Image 1 (tube, one colour):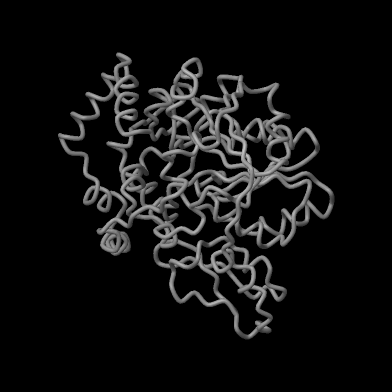
Image 2: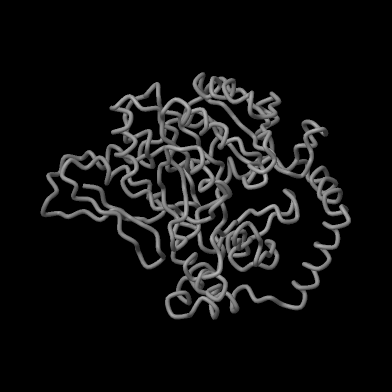
Length: 395
């Protein structure tokens, strides 16, 4: 029977709940809003399947030959809607064209983040743009297995820990499964996300989409944006928006994120995708400030997918070593914010407005910095300065 003695040892991947033959494990939220397995001991037969499937408890070191690419979707509209270069849309389209299904993180009607699957190209838009909240996987692992049993092509995207959980649950390789993990900074709490929605409650009823990484000012300075019918009703960058500030100061991540076992170069997925802000270091011609995706292939299957998408993307092969060099998010866990416990304690008693105004107030200094940054963006100076700073830091 699986027991979570330390919360940092559970990434919430749901593999234990999915594999239980008696369906006696339920993923329940704790006070911080993160889901953990809860066992109905009256139904449990002590088979041990839940312990054996846990990816945190059975970490394996592996190496493989890797190939690396920079990818930009040719349709600028799709690329601008995407967090980076739109590579995932291209990958997903190849699966759908074979009659397959695509799984990813999307909002429900109340902007709660959950994993769902789609079967039509038009629906892929729900997966575009980042969602800095741990998604509710629900029963998706079992759904994936059922589709594979019926010889369907399946593409599953998620954080590295979610992919490790799926891989462990399936227990074997499937030719028709394409696993795509996204390089992850850390996974914020759904509870804190709801506090933010409460903080923004006057805006929420007016919008049909929320973008964590909107390219309102271009790719190099993405903003939190609230969108209605394609128009921005609210936008603020990482210096001003309280949810982005909470995210980048690591105050509300899942405990396992502070010692993440999935931070490594060689992964169980077929391919890893993430941003390439410094595309100018690889090819200055690709630096158009609309977004670029780094794609690292771990398997022949992943490499084959890249070959299949080349007619719908601009693609450049680069050195795998150079692609991953200096990418802290791939190798290093986030450091716990010393105010984390106080933040979550206050979140229990405070409204969203009270919480974010206490920890992330919009001061006069922040307002001035935001005005300066926007001015630099409009004049084009910001991008040049960022290049210089990144080169100075060795990025």
